[in-house]
Image 1 (cartoon, protein in one colour):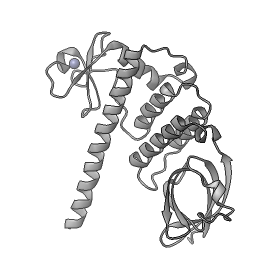
Image 2 (cartoon, helix red, strand yellow; image 1 turned 90 degrees about the horizontal axis):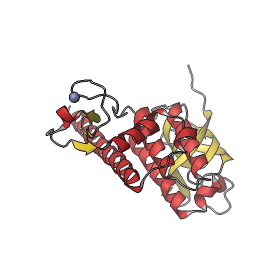
Image 3 (cartoon, protein in one colour; image 1 turned 30 degrees about the vertical axis):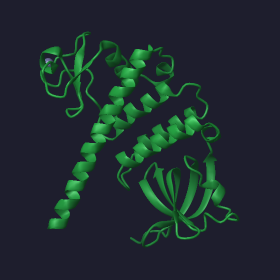
Image 4 (spheres, helix red, strand yellow; image 1 turned 60 degrees about the vertical axis):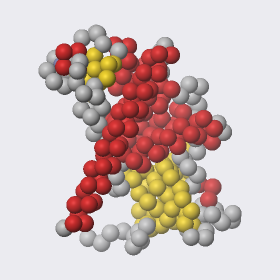
Length: 253
Ligand SMILES: [Zn+2]
């Protein structure tokens, strides 16, 4: 069957780089086509009618033409500009952070409609949020779930028993929790206080409307953020290494 030359999709712009004299290369996330790399011709000319509609983090309706190298954006229409993100430096950097995570966790053309929804949902709320802390942690834990790295937070990974409300342990490499019996003395396992474990479970299982009402002590905030960041960093490093390894294998064939 012949493929249509033009196609159309919603897209959120994750990344933008200059290309040649007047063009831009965009990395975008779409609901059904996953992550794509697209060429926006003439986008850097001041007179370009397209330029205004390809700002970072915008949700746009794009018409795209297939091409041998990068497919080419032929028309765009802004659906959501999330203006609040661009008017506040902290929010801009938080949106950058989320886009960067998605870019690293998602392979090109790997469709993940739920992840697209999560990103659009979070950007929309971030644009108006007074406190973005819970919003970002909520994003992180669901990003992990939707990309296959959901941490186990309810059972010990060694004995499979439900965790008791005591200090347990968390292991980045194994992706989850251990009871005191199996976590104590395990290399690279770190203690996880009950309060932190409860917050992580709440983030993982409750709808955003309930999560938004959580009140956390500074210590629990700090520990929750640190644990998630540590787990994300570890997961990405391991993933990047395995990708590098696969490329190496292919080359030696
Ligand atoms: Zn155990």
